[in-house]
Length: 265
Image (tube, rainbow, N blue to C red; front, side, top):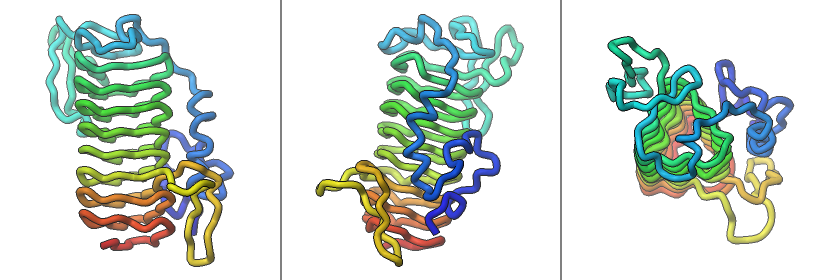
């Protein structure tokens, strides 16, 4: 009922180690810091790690940062593999684009292929960003953010100590703290995943069999594969939404376990 495989299909997930020997789905959050600290991060170019907004657009290809001045960039949707970079009419397969005005902080940032990072995005290390993901204008990644393939971290979306599995999307004005988004999750504009109770102590998970201690002082939400939330919805700390559940617009989800295909109104 609370095990990882009840919430996520990990068969194609690049980081299954996060959930090995886990009793509960949220145990991945407990391992996130140690896992990300253990990853080997490629060195960043001196033009990137100035801890200030980039003055020029850069292209990342084959572990090398290139000035975009003499390259042709076709700005298609990164999540659909339509972002393309050409050098003298030769396609640079899998090239990522970091636009002028983006800021990358620290040395532990790992970029996949075909990524688009838009102006105003702020990415603090450690961060891992998977292939064909979009980090949109003014997105704020505060550290220990593990973002999968074909994901979207949207405009003015703040993410902290959180996991996005493949094709998870938080497109607009969202807050995600200490949370996990499963595959194909989609958050409506203004969704907030609250992660801290007003009262002291760990966040409990309410279940039909009684509360379970999460062991986490800060714990937002676990949204299983294919969950959808409506605009301006909120989850209380310790909310678990089962696969294919729907949280309607302008609705607050009570903390605790909500089973598969739940409709919360």
